[in-house]
Amino acid sequence: TGLSVLKALKARRRKQNSLQPAGALACQPVRVHVPRRGDRSVRQAATLSCDALQASLKMKCDYTGAHYAIYWINIDGEYVVGGSYMSDSHDKIMQYLQSCGGVKLASDDIFESVSSSGVRSFISSAGSADGFSRTALCDECGIKSLCIESFEDGVLEYGTTLPWMEAPSCPEIPKAMIRDAIESDSACYVVFWVEKGGCFVGSDYVTPWRKRMNKTLRGDDANFALRSREMVESCSQPLPSIAKVLEEQKEMYITDAPKDDNFERKELAKEFGMNTIRLMPCESGVLEYGVPSRSQLVGDSLGASLKMRCDLSGADYAMYWVEVDGNFAVAGYYVTPQQEKLLKKEGIRE
Image (cartoon, rainbow, N blue to C red; front, side, top):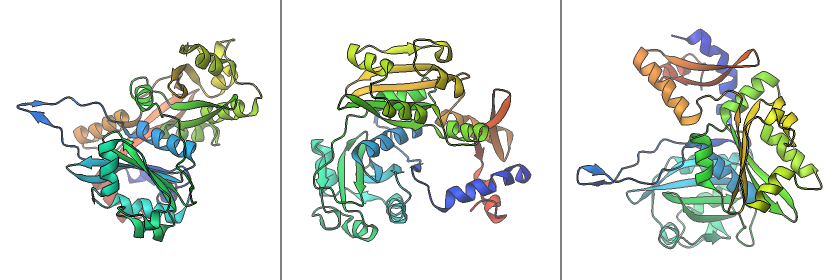
């Protein structure tokens, strides 16, 4: 049954399931009805997958100071949660996210206005706003102010437990570029650099599998994106690579970062096994992403592959181990629903 192998995950999973830590993310499967024209499906723009969506929600919170973000998908006139992000470990915010995640919302006045006009709605007092259907829940959970704006196939809500006197500004998040980086090029991190006052600030996202591998191999929470942000924020002058891309509006493609003498972070690239790094100009700044020395399946593609392996073989679980500098670490795993129930019954999962 695989119980002996999966028991090693007991402590980790118990900690993760008790209360999501700061920066915790959630994506939920949502059934989306594909429109048809006669006998043919109508082609639609690709929506954000799990990692790309999580990156976008995190960056929205980082640049606005929001404590949470929720992506509401419009399906047949009702809104359901497609993903959420929490920037701080906060019981009340977690309660709010969990409450929202379990409901289907009819389109209220504010959702309808934002969807039809594309104009962001700012609610300075979420607990007493007219036309907003969750005033009581916001009041109960301490949500003071929030914004709702058009986003993908629905709307994006982000808010704070602190009052906003005015709607926060935020650079345009390059969602399509983030999606291509993660899904097409197997990027294990993305950083969105924005210039402020002659310096750069960055919002980063590191894929869960990469965080897990770094933790296993290094024993700490450090990663290339984090160390890069620390380097940029500690320097009095912008890093040459980022500044050059922004100034010349031309992308920079570094194919062997640990050996490139012109790359100011080559030692970091060597330390964290980052081989290919790409920096691209975008509307509001510079998007950077990196691919490790050995590219692996990640995100939804990895999850689908592991599930299919279980479905076709009858296995209870599948675990993907990758080799890094002579050591092996788990990059992802899948457990069947039946095995999940058994694990819970045995007390291995909560």
